[in-house]
Length: 373
Image (cartoon, rainbow, N blue to C red):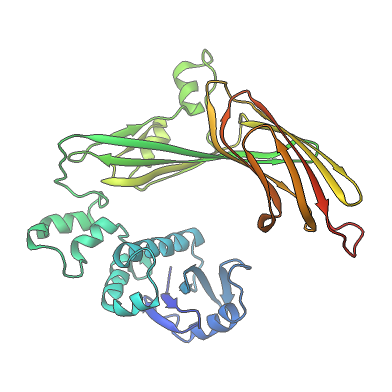
Protein backbone atom coordinates (compact mmCIF):
# COMPACT_ATOMS: atom_id res chain seq x y z
CA UNK A 1 0.00 0.00 0.00
CA UNK A 2 1.06 3.62 0.50
CA UNK A 3 4.61 3.92 1.79
CA UNK A 4 4.84 7.69 2.35
CA UNK A 5 2.79 10.88 2.21
CA UNK A 6 4.50 14.18 1.42
CA UNK A 7 3.34 17.78 1.12
CA UNK A 8 5.61 19.94 -1.03
CA UNK A 9 5.50 23.63 -1.89
CA UNK A 10 5.80 25.03 -5.40
CA UNK A 11 9.62 25.04 -5.14
CA UNK A 12 9.67 21.32 -4.39
CA UNK A 13 10.69 21.67 -0.74
CA UNK A 14 9.17 19.20 1.70
CA UNK A 15 6.84 20.91 4.15
CA UNK A 16 5.47 17.79 5.86
CA UNK A 17 6.17 14.11 5.34
CA UNK A 18 5.00 10.95 7.08
CA UNK A 19 6.64 7.59 6.40
CA UNK A 20 4.45 4.53 6.92
CA UNK A 21 6.84 1.90 5.48
CA UNK A 22 10.61 1.76 5.20
CA UNK A 23 10.88 0.93 1.48
CA UNK A 24 11.12 4.63 0.45
CA UNK A 25 13.01 7.64 1.81
CA UNK A 26 12.80 11.43 1.79
CA UNK A 27 15.40 11.48 -0.98
CA UNK A 28 12.62 10.47 -3.36
CA UNK A 29 11.34 14.05 -3.11
CA UNK A 30 14.37 15.19 -5.14
CA UNK A 31 13.34 12.98 -8.04
CA UNK A 32 9.79 14.28 -7.87
CA UNK A 33 10.97 17.89 -7.76
CA UNK A 34 13.24 17.48 -10.80
CA UNK A 35 11.05 15.32 -13.02
CA UNK A 36 7.58 16.69 -12.20
CA UNK A 37 7.70 20.17 -10.62
CA UNK A 38 10.74 21.52 -12.47
CA UNK A 39 9.58 19.92 -15.74
CA UNK A 40 6.17 21.62 -15.29
CA UNK A 41 4.26 18.41 -15.94
CA UNK A 42 1.38 19.23 -13.62
CA UNK A 43 -1.78 19.95 -15.57
CA UNK A 44 -0.40 18.59 -18.85
CA UNK A 45 0.46 14.99 -17.92
CA UNK A 46 -1.32 12.30 -15.91
CA UNK A 47 -0.92 12.77 -12.12
CA UNK A 48 0.89 9.44 -11.84
CA UNK A 49 4.66 9.27 -12.34
CA UNK A 50 6.91 6.20 -12.18
CA UNK A 51 10.45 7.08 -11.09
CA UNK A 52 13.09 4.49 -10.12
CA UNK A 53 10.58 1.70 -9.37
CA UNK A 54 8.54 4.07 -7.19
CA UNK A 55 5.10 5.36 -8.12
CA UNK A 56 4.25 8.99 -7.32
CA UNK A 57 0.53 9.88 -7.25
CA UNK A 58 -0.16 13.53 -6.62
CA UNK A 59 -2.77 16.28 -6.64
CA UNK A 60 -2.59 20.03 -6.03
CA UNK A 61 -4.20 22.48 -3.65
CA UNK A 62 -3.29 26.09 -4.43
CA UNK A 63 0.53 26.05 -4.66
CA UNK A 64 1.05 22.83 -2.69
CA UNK A 65 1.50 19.26 -3.90
CA UNK A 66 0.00 16.35 -1.95
CA UNK A 67 2.04 13.31 -2.99
CA UNK A 68 1.64 9.62 -2.17
CA UNK A 69 4.59 7.25 -2.72
CA UNK A 70 4.36 3.50 -3.12
CA UNK A 71 6.38 0.60 -4.51
CA UNK A 72 3.45 -1.82 -4.67
CA UNK A 73 0.73 -2.21 -7.28
CA UNK A 74 -1.97 -0.19 -5.53
CA UNK A 75 -5.40 0.85 -6.74
CA UNK A 76 -4.89 4.44 -7.98
CA UNK A 77 -8.53 5.36 -7.31
CA UNK A 78 -8.10 4.46 -3.63
CA UNK A 79 -4.93 6.56 -3.32
CA UNK A 80 -6.49 9.61 -4.99
CA UNK A 81 -9.62 9.27 -2.88
CA UNK A 82 -7.45 9.33 0.24
CA UNK A 83 -5.60 12.44 -0.97
CA UNK A 84 -8.89 14.21 -1.73
CA UNK A 85 -10.25 13.22 1.69
CA UNK A 86 -7.05 14.49 3.29
CA UNK A 87 -7.50 17.89 1.64
CA UNK A 88 -11.16 17.92 2.70
CA UNK A 89 -10.16 17.23 6.32
CA UNK A 90 -7.57 20.02 6.28
CA UNK A 91 -10.17 22.40 4.85
CA UNK A 92 -12.45 21.56 7.77
CA UNK A 93 -9.70 22.27 10.32
CA UNK A 94 -7.73 25.11 8.67
CA UNK A 95 -10.30 26.75 6.37
CA UNK A 96 -11.24 26.38 2.72
CA UNK A 97 -8.24 28.38 1.47
CA UNK A 98 -5.54 27.02 3.74
CA UNK A 99 -2.05 27.82 2.48
CA UNK A 100 1.60 27.06 3.25
CA UNK A 101 1.67 29.33 6.30
CA UNK A 102 -1.39 27.63 7.78
CA UNK A 103 0.27 24.25 7.34
CA UNK A 104 3.50 25.39 9.02
CA UNK A 105 1.61 26.93 11.96
CA UNK A 106 -0.30 23.70 12.66
CA UNK A 107 2.37 21.01 12.33
CA UNK A 108 1.29 19.12 15.44
CA UNK A 109 -2.32 19.01 14.33
CA UNK A 110 -1.43 17.78 10.84
CA UNK A 111 0.81 15.00 12.12
CA UNK A 112 -2.00 13.87 14.43
CA UNK A 113 -4.37 13.76 11.47
CA UNK A 114 -1.83 11.80 9.42
CA UNK A 115 -1.49 9.20 12.16
CA UNK A 116 -5.25 8.85 12.64
CA UNK A 117 -6.22 8.69 8.96
CA UNK A 118 -3.63 6.08 7.91
CA UNK A 119 -1.95 3.10 9.57
CA UNK A 120 0.89 1.14 7.94
CA UNK A 121 -0.10 2.56 4.55
CA UNK A 122 -3.79 1.63 4.79
CA UNK A 123 -6.40 4.44 4.97
CA UNK A 124 -8.36 4.47 8.20
CA UNK A 125 -10.95 6.87 9.65
CA UNK A 126 -11.45 9.92 7.40
CA UNK A 127 -14.75 11.14 8.85
CA UNK A 128 -14.36 14.78 9.89
CA UNK A 129 -17.10 14.63 12.52
CA UNK A 130 -15.45 11.70 14.29
CA UNK A 131 -11.94 13.15 14.04
CA UNK A 132 -13.14 16.35 15.68
CA UNK A 133 -14.26 14.38 18.71
CA UNK A 134 -10.70 13.62 19.79
CA UNK A 135 -8.54 15.96 17.66
CA UNK A 136 -10.00 19.31 18.61
CA UNK A 137 -7.12 21.83 18.98
CA UNK A 138 -8.06 22.20 22.64
CA UNK A 139 -11.10 24.37 21.97
CA UNK A 140 -13.85 21.87 22.86
CA UNK A 141 -15.73 22.73 26.02
CA UNK A 142 -15.59 20.09 28.78
CA UNK A 143 -19.36 19.50 28.68
CA UNK A 144 -19.12 18.70 24.97
CA UNK A 145 -16.54 15.98 25.42
CA UNK A 146 -17.95 12.48 24.82
CA UNK A 147 -17.54 9.62 27.25
CA UNK A 148 -14.42 7.50 26.58
CA UNK A 149 -16.54 4.39 26.01
CA UNK A 150 -18.73 6.18 23.46
CA UNK A 151 -15.68 7.62 21.72
CA UNK A 152 -14.01 4.20 21.42
CA UNK A 153 -17.12 2.59 19.96
CA UNK A 154 -17.56 5.44 17.53
CA UNK A 155 -13.97 5.27 16.28
CA UNK A 156 -13.93 1.49 15.90
CA UNK A 157 -17.62 0.88 15.24
CA UNK A 158 -19.36 0.24 11.95
CA UNK A 159 -21.21 3.59 11.95
CA UNK A 160 -18.49 6.16 12.47
CA UNK A 161 -20.16 8.81 10.28
CA UNK A 162 -22.95 9.49 12.79
CA UNK A 163 -22.69 9.93 16.54
CA UNK A 164 -25.35 8.76 18.96
CA UNK A 165 -27.58 11.03 20.97
CA UNK A 166 -28.58 13.44 18.18
CA UNK A 167 -31.99 15.01 18.85
CA UNK A 168 -34.20 17.44 16.93
CA UNK A 169 -37.57 18.92 17.80
CA UNK A 170 -38.71 18.27 14.23
CA UNK A 171 -37.44 15.55 11.90
CA UNK A 172 -36.66 16.88 8.42
CA UNK A 173 -35.04 15.49 5.26
CA UNK A 174 -34.20 17.59 2.20
CA UNK A 175 -33.28 15.94 -1.11
CA UNK A 176 -31.85 17.65 -4.20
CA UNK A 177 -31.27 15.77 -7.46
CA UNK A 178 -28.80 17.60 -9.72
CA UNK A 179 -28.45 16.34 -13.30
CA UNK A 180 -26.39 17.51 -16.26
CA UNK A 181 -26.89 16.42 -19.88
CA UNK A 182 -23.73 16.01 -21.94
CA UNK A 183 -24.26 15.89 -25.69
CA UNK A 184 -21.90 15.65 -28.68
CA UNK A 185 -23.33 16.30 -32.16
CA UNK A 186 -21.73 15.88 -35.57
CA UNK A 187 -21.79 18.62 -38.23
CA UNK A 188 -24.81 16.90 -39.84
CA UNK A 189 -26.80 16.89 -36.59
CA UNK A 190 -26.32 13.20 -35.69
CA UNK A 191 -25.85 12.33 -32.03
CA UNK A 192 -22.36 10.95 -31.44
CA UNK A 193 -22.50 10.66 -27.66
CA UNK A 194 -25.05 11.57 -25.02
CA UNK A 195 -25.22 10.87 -21.32
CA UNK A 196 -26.77 12.18 -18.14
CA UNK A 197 -24.69 12.45 -14.97
CA UNK A 198 -26.48 13.12 -11.73
CA UNK A 199 -25.92 13.36 -8.02
CA UNK A 200 -28.28 13.11 -5.06
CA UNK A 201 -27.59 15.66 -2.31
CA UNK A 202 -29.26 15.26 1.08
CA UNK A 203 -29.59 17.34 4.22
CA UNK A 204 -30.88 15.29 7.14
CA UNK A 205 -32.05 16.54 10.52
CA UNK A 206 -33.22 13.33 12.18
CA UNK A 207 -33.27 12.14 15.77
CA UNK A 208 -31.42 9.04 16.89
CA UNK A 209 -30.06 6.42 14.48
CA UNK A 210 -32.76 6.19 11.79
CA UNK A 211 -32.64 3.74 8.90
CA UNK A 212 -33.71 5.38 5.65
CA UNK A 213 -34.64 3.90 2.28
CA UNK A 214 -34.28 5.69 -1.01
CA UNK A 215 -35.94 4.27 -4.15
CA UNK A 216 -35.14 4.77 -7.83
CA UNK A 217 -37.18 4.07 -10.92
CA UNK A 218 -34.39 1.76 -12.00
CA UNK A 219 -35.19 -0.63 -14.83
CA UNK A 220 -34.37 -3.68 -12.72
CA UNK A 221 -36.81 -2.65 -9.99
CA UNK A 222 -39.73 -1.86 -12.30
CA UNK A 223 -39.30 -4.99 -14.41
CA UNK A 224 -39.20 -7.14 -11.29
CA UNK A 225 -42.27 -5.58 -9.69
CA UNK A 226 -44.62 -5.00 -12.61
CA UNK A 227 -43.32 -7.10 -15.48
CA UNK A 228 -44.16 -5.76 -18.95
CA UNK A 229 -47.36 -3.95 -17.99
CA UNK A 230 -45.67 -0.61 -17.33
CA UNK A 231 -43.19 1.39 -19.33
CA UNK A 232 -39.54 0.51 -18.69
CA UNK A 233 -37.72 2.71 -16.24
CA UNK A 234 -34.36 4.38 -16.47
CA UNK A 235 -31.46 1.96 -16.82
CA UNK A 236 -28.58 3.19 -14.67
CA UNK A 237 -25.20 2.26 -16.11
CA UNK A 238 -23.03 2.87 -13.05
CA UNK A 239 -23.39 4.52 -9.68
CA UNK A 240 -21.26 5.29 -6.65
CA UNK A 241 -22.57 5.61 -3.10
CA UNK A 242 -21.67 7.25 0.17
CA UNK A 243 -20.11 4.75 2.53
CA UNK A 244 -23.24 4.79 4.72
CA UNK A 245 -25.19 2.85 2.04
CA UNK A 246 -25.57 -0.89 2.59
CA UNK A 247 -24.33 -2.31 -0.69
CA UNK A 248 -25.59 -5.80 0.11
CA UNK A 249 -29.19 -4.58 0.23
CA UNK A 250 -28.74 -2.68 -3.01
CA UNK A 251 -27.40 -5.75 -4.82
CA UNK A 252 -30.25 -7.90 -3.48
CA UNK A 253 -33.34 -5.77 -4.13
CA UNK A 254 -31.99 -2.51 -5.64
CA UNK A 255 -33.14 -0.40 -2.71
CA UNK A 256 -30.78 2.12 -1.17
CA UNK A 257 -30.80 1.54 2.60
CA UNK A 258 -28.63 3.68 4.86
CA UNK A 259 -28.24 5.37 8.22
CA UNK A 260 -27.51 8.94 7.12
CA UNK A 261 -24.86 11.28 8.52
CA UNK A 262 -26.13 14.36 10.29
CA UNK A 263 -26.36 17.41 8.05
CA UNK A 264 -25.44 17.78 4.38
CA UNK A 265 -23.81 14.99 2.38
CA UNK A 266 -23.80 13.44 -1.09
CA UNK A 267 -25.73 10.17 -1.10
CA UNK A 268 -24.86 8.90 -4.58
CA UNK A 269 -23.74 9.67 -8.12
CA UNK A 270 -24.97 7.93 -11.25
CA UNK A 271 -24.72 7.92 -15.05
CA UNK A 272 -27.33 7.12 -17.70
CA UNK A 273 -26.63 6.63 -21.41
CA UNK A 274 -29.82 5.02 -22.78
CA UNK A 275 -33.26 6.48 -23.57
CA UNK A 276 -32.15 10.07 -23.11
CA UNK A 277 -34.58 12.70 -24.35
CA UNK A 278 -32.54 15.64 -25.54
CA UNK A 279 -33.89 18.89 -24.05
CA UNK A 280 -33.14 20.97 -27.17
CA UNK A 281 -32.81 20.47 -30.90
CA UNK A 282 -30.34 22.82 -32.56
CA UNK A 283 -30.22 23.44 -36.33
CA UNK A 284 -27.28 25.60 -37.48
CA UNK A 285 -26.69 27.12 -40.93
CA UNK A 286 -23.33 28.77 -41.66
CA UNK A 287 -22.46 30.65 -44.87
CA UNK A 288 -18.81 31.58 -45.38
CA UNK A 289 -17.79 34.48 -47.62
CA UNK A 290 -14.50 36.30 -48.22
CA UNK A 291 -14.47 38.56 -45.14
CA UNK A 292 -17.79 37.68 -43.61
CA UNK A 293 -19.58 34.75 -41.99
CA UNK A 294 -23.36 34.50 -41.78
CA UNK A 295 -24.76 32.34 -38.99
CA UNK A 296 -28.40 31.28 -38.57
CA UNK A 297 -29.32 29.19 -35.57
CA UNK A 298 -32.67 27.65 -34.71
CA UNK A 299 -33.28 26.18 -31.26
CA UNK A 300 -36.39 24.13 -30.43
CA UNK A 301 -37.28 22.98 -26.92
CA UNK A 302 -38.25 19.30 -26.94
CA UNK A 303 -39.70 19.17 -23.43
CA UNK A 304 -43.30 19.74 -22.36
CA UNK A 305 -44.87 23.18 -22.65
CA UNK A 306 -45.68 22.94 -18.93
CA UNK A 307 -41.98 23.13 -18.07
CA UNK A 308 -39.36 25.87 -18.33
CA UNK A 309 -35.61 25.77 -18.75
CA UNK A 310 -33.83 28.49 -16.80
CA UNK A 311 -30.48 30.18 -17.39
CA UNK A 312 -29.87 28.59 -20.79
CA UNK A 313 -26.48 29.50 -22.33
CA UNK A 314 -25.67 28.75 -25.99
CA UNK A 315 -22.16 29.41 -27.30
CA UNK A 316 -21.52 29.77 -31.05
CA UNK A 317 -17.77 29.66 -31.84
CA UNK A 318 -16.50 32.26 -34.31
CA UNK A 319 -13.10 32.65 -36.09
CA UNK A 320 -10.19 34.12 -34.16
CA UNK A 321 -9.92 37.11 -36.51
CA UNK A 322 -13.46 38.31 -35.80
CA UNK A 323 -13.72 42.11 -35.75
CA UNK A 324 -17.37 42.58 -34.81
CA UNK A 325 -20.72 40.85 -35.03
CA UNK A 326 -24.24 42.11 -35.73
CA UNK A 327 -26.67 39.88 -33.89
CA UNK A 328 -30.44 39.54 -34.00
CA UNK A 329 -32.31 37.11 -31.77
CA UNK A 330 -35.96 36.44 -31.00
CA UNK A 331 -35.61 36.59 -27.21
CA UNK A 332 -32.91 36.58 -24.57
CA UNK A 333 -29.64 38.46 -24.89
CA UNK A 334 -26.79 37.63 -27.24
CA UNK A 335 -23.45 39.34 -27.77
CA UNK A 336 -19.99 38.65 -29.10
CA UNK A 337 -17.49 37.97 -26.31
CA UNK A 338 -13.89 38.14 -27.62
CA UNK A 339 -12.40 36.46 -24.55
CA UNK A 340 -14.42 33.32 -25.31
CA UNK A 341 -14.08 33.61 -29.11
CA UNK A 342 -17.79 32.97 -29.38
CA UNK A 343 -21.22 34.52 -29.59
CA UNK A 344 -22.81 33.85 -26.22
CA UNK A 345 -26.61 33.66 -26.17
CA UNK A 346 -28.24 33.75 -22.74
CA UNK A 347 -31.93 33.01 -22.12
CA UNK A 348 -33.21 33.32 -18.55
CA UNK A 349 -36.48 31.47 -19.15
CA UNK A 350 -36.96 29.09 -22.09
CA UNK A 351 -40.54 27.70 -22.33
CA UNK A 352 -41.17 24.16 -23.49
CA UNK A 353 -42.04 23.51 -27.18
CA UNK A 354 -40.86 27.05 -27.97
CA UNK A 355 -38.77 27.89 -31.01
CA UNK A 356 -36.29 30.72 -31.16
CA UNK A 357 -33.96 32.06 -33.82
CA UNK A 358 -30.59 33.78 -33.85
CA UNK A 359 -28.94 35.36 -36.87
CA UNK A 360 -25.49 36.94 -36.89
CA UNK A 361 -23.31 38.70 -39.45
CA UNK A 362 -19.68 38.30 -38.42
CA UNK A 363 -17.12 40.68 -39.96
CA UNK A 364 -13.57 39.35 -40.18
CA UNK A 365 -10.23 41.15 -40.16
CA UNK A 366 -7.77 40.50 -43.01
CA UNK A 367 -5.03 38.00 -42.23
CA UNK A 368 -1.96 36.63 -43.95
CA UNK A 369 -3.51 33.21 -44.37
CA UNK A 370 -6.31 32.66 -46.86
CA UNK A 371 -8.56 31.09 -44.21
CA UNK A 372 -8.00 31.81 -40.56
CA UNK A 373 -10.18 29.06 -39.08
